[in-house]
Image 1 (spheres, helix red, strand yellow):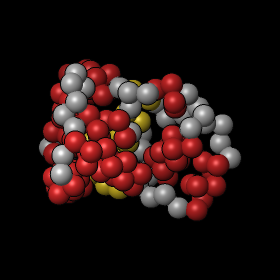
Image 2 (cartoon, one colour; image 1 turned 90 degrees about the horizontal axis):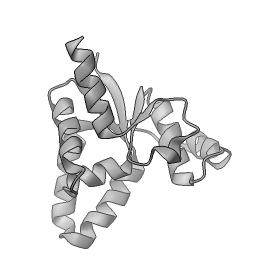
Image 3 (tube, helix red, strand yellow; image 1 turned 180 degrees about the vertical axis):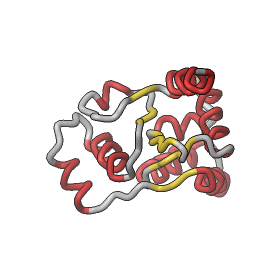
Length: 143
């Protein structure tokens, strides 16, 4: 069974917005998911936020098409009343990060991939950048 990997909004933006110098590692995550080596989990918040930002730089039609392609590669985590409640009562500095975290937990993710690790200091899950994850993934495959 593939590792369940939660990717934060900034990683989705790096991938779909092709943001240098972070695009390459985000694309490698997508390739691992496409090959079935990992299962990417993305929250509905990320889809909405990424659509908003991409639509500022390209047409809404292109932004939605990119999100459709991403949806093929990933599963969507749930955000329900319980997750909202946990987020509202958590010690996270930012509410959005608390929702991402509790959504990742509810989706049985094993790790959170983000470029803002400091925002997940209260996480019981390991938190890594895409590059750190890729390095550890390669090391574990070679061992």
